[in-house]
Image 1: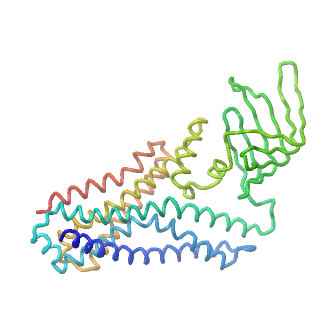
Image 2: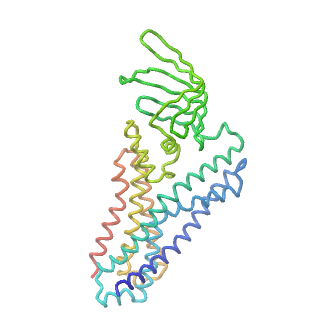
Image 3: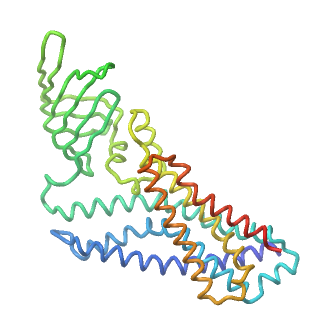
Length: 355
């Protein structure tokens, strides 16, 4: 019997969540497309703008999942409560804790779905969409494709003037320091790239070395260097934090910390993504607590309004804390988890007051 009821509750919640997700994605996708139409230029036409908006749908779905789960759960469970089905379940001997556990099972299913989108689909498609947009905007102006960037490998600082998606670089500068942070040499290569063995190929390299008795200049047509910064790590450095998977974020954070670089932006994104995924499981339980109250006799519009207010409040507070945490140098993990902890506390208090 409990298995049948669990499946029945799951269908109600998932159906409501899917409906809300479709509506929110349609609105978010429309706003995304309108914003892109303002930047149409060169080969980046309306069709490419539509493609860009469609490719960003998975990452938008990941960001909207907690709000969709809350509103969808309120609609699904609220409809059951309005028909007195929740009351009948209680009368049949199901405790509030048992009902919460059943609803949590549905939350777990949505959590797994959200994690899969946030790890395997959303970031990679977001990165591809941004790269496609950049190439279309610049057309045939290859010298403008790519991004200039600085990377650090121990005591070596590298300045790459142009990096594209194929990891072909323009000119590159290398600054080497010793253990006393004294400049040892400056080198410039006219062109560079990373081969299949993750070795750096430097063409037309000219290096100026500072020694005790003067300056030495060394030139080479082709030179190979082995740096800790490989193609994957460099790709992580070029991508926005939103376009990185959790594995990519963790790997890049580890690299930044080992090289004594600021990793707060990427740590905030990593913990923010984990906490947002976990919050998806909390939302249906919170909705269950609400349907036992005045929402049992309330209209669908009332339940929808409550869900929108709570969901948007959670979203806005999360975004505000994530931004302010970086500005005021607060602990990224604490800032990211604080909204979910508060949400969990509110859920526990609301459930404990049900008789």
